[in-house]
Image (cartoon, rainbow, N blue to C red; front, side, top):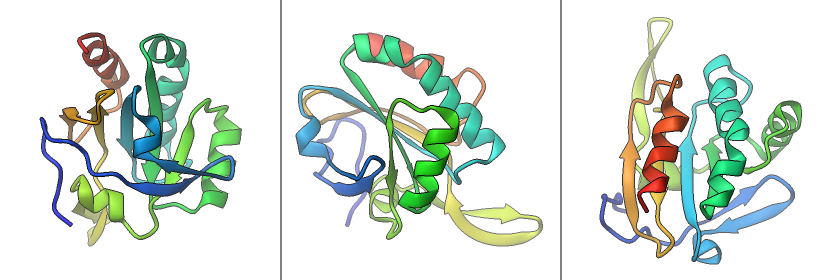
Length: 155
């Protein structure tokens, strides 16, 4: 599978999600979609990022935008994370890294001196017609959600 580029139509995908759902991109047509990829449930940075999206959900909703978090964690782990943080959006489980590879977010990372492959914190904005409009890579959590919200306002 090739990777998707800004300005291109995002290929359809289907992944298991919280709430015993399966999320399919084509089912979301007519809405903007923010896909945010994060390394691991219930870790400090990932929790803060999710809380920032949660705390701004009404603003995103009022602009026809669906928020979806994506990591390689299991649905069981996602359900616990979502419940503990009262996230009003779904988390997708990408155990096979299909979506991670489509968006090219699996990168070599240095964890305590060891090289490991993991998710590089990244966010993608897909417009209502399914076109990738913006991408943010190597995301720093502080202020990021506000940047994404400003980009949504331009659609």
